[in-house]
Length: 194
Figure 1: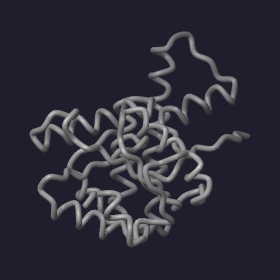
Figure 2: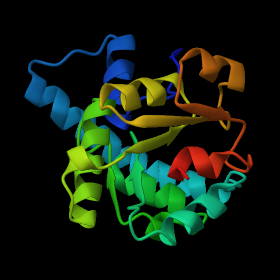
Figure 3: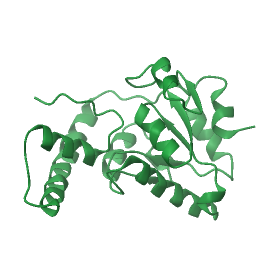
Figure 4: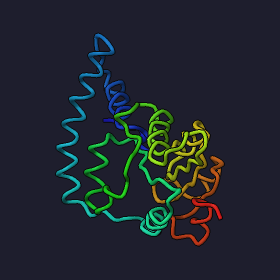
């Protein structure tokens, strides 16, 4: 039986950690990568079935934040997730919002969360026709790992207690701002500035 938290981990990191916890070893890194890819292909089939029959909702304030981002031409709305791209699409299509994110950084880009976030930030900057260094990058997440990854790439972090971690736990990680959810009246200013 596996007993580790998946919170804030990339899909590939979860598979790699599971193999290690189960004592499964591979002859080479290439063999491990092939087995991880095969495991993730199987996971996508299981995920599609599971998501189809599981109630999923959009957290309070999320739709408003996406609408506000769409209304600002200087903002590029992307998805930064440890999910592989197809997994993110399956999950977010279930609530009809995957199409709202015109780019992203995904678990396909890297097993390392800061690296995948930076891949997404570069895509967003390109979409805006700007250098990534000239952009304010804002990462919204619900785990300490999201906050740490945002800090690692020089991004602002907006922590929301919509997952396994409460406001107090997230505040201890020193995000730029922390809210119970994005419905908080002060969330838009934290996300978009004045």
